[in-house]
Amino acid sequence: MNSNSFGDKWTFTSFGESHGRAIGGVLDGVKAGLRIDFDLIRQELSRRSGKDIIGASARAKSEADEVEWLSGVLDGVTLGTPIAFIIRNTNARPEDYEFLKHNYRVGHADRVYEQKYGIRDWRGGGRASARETAARVVAGTLAKQELAAKGVCINAHLIQVGTETNPDKFAETIASCQKDGDSIGGIIECRINGLPVGTGEPIFDKLQAHLAYAVMSINACKGFEYGTGFAGVTQPGSAINHISGGISGGISDGSEIVFRCVFKPTPSTPKAGVKGRHDACVATRAVPVVEAMTALALINLI
Image 1 (spheres, rainbow, N blue to C red):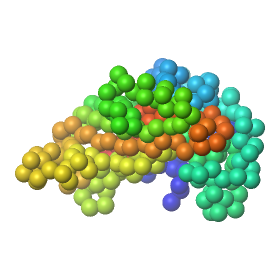
Image 2: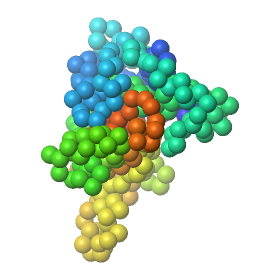
Image 3: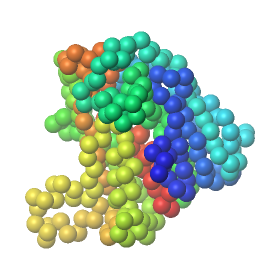
């Protein structure tokens, strides 16, 4: 199994490090004749960067995130051949992480990477950095375009920050946490409409299993639930047996699919004595990444 690739029919391979020259991806299996909506890709990358979001990292807000298409595209139309693209790291500052050459951050992959491979990229976490998710957004946006042509719509949004569930108070909650030099977690809800009945397979290839696999691969994601989820344990079966979450027996039933995922607070904070450019709430910028990974999971199943 290639741990840097996702999907077996519509395959996305990610490459690059957080503070290397570039990040990027290779897509294989994209149909020929798809006219790429470059404006939509820029829009989705802008959502991920969090330029208008309180608490987003300074690094994310300052990166240009311009996509360079290297192959598989002619005059904005896909050729059916492998598509390669890169996003140059224009604001990489590895010197900000010099202190990590001989130190391991608590709550990060620093130590286990070195234990596993015998070497690690200390420049902001290397491959383990959320910077890598920009490439996922590009790939996922192309998948969303193909899915939209089939009538499938994916929409995710932040529904909780810490204990706060009022969207009007999310910014205030994050700002307060950032002022204190700390971070906070959040919950994202994703809704899928228009998915054909019968998507997903019984037993090991259940639809919810593929969605969970895709979403749980995102940095800082710590939990996944669909339908009644964990809250269902507090209810009698007679009260919730009609709630499917859009999936029955691992197969889509034609109704709206609803799932939620939780993102932990970043452990790298000024309050914890960690230098760098970090998010006060990573969940705010993870919304388009959740949509992208959902699209990649569904395009492979469909």
